[in-house]
Length: 88
Image 1: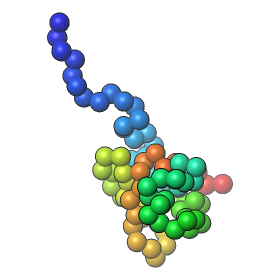
Image 2 (image 1 turned 180 degrees about the horizontal axis):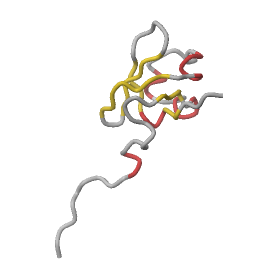
Image 3 (image 1 turned 30 degrees about the vertical axis):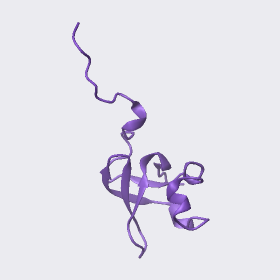
């Protein structure tokens, strides 16, 4: 028998198709609360990250670099803490 490849086939380890470079997103508060990123930041995230949109500038592993349409620094957040932004 041939050995099976040891590559990860876990669907959670790959970002959803909607969350790639250039996608507009917002923070999913339920996924963010209690995370390592939340404990390293303010107790309550700013409203603009919950309302969106933020643009994904780069994806590296499980993280995305985000730029908000405000004069604030870019941030890195886990992809599982983000959701696609929809207007309305």
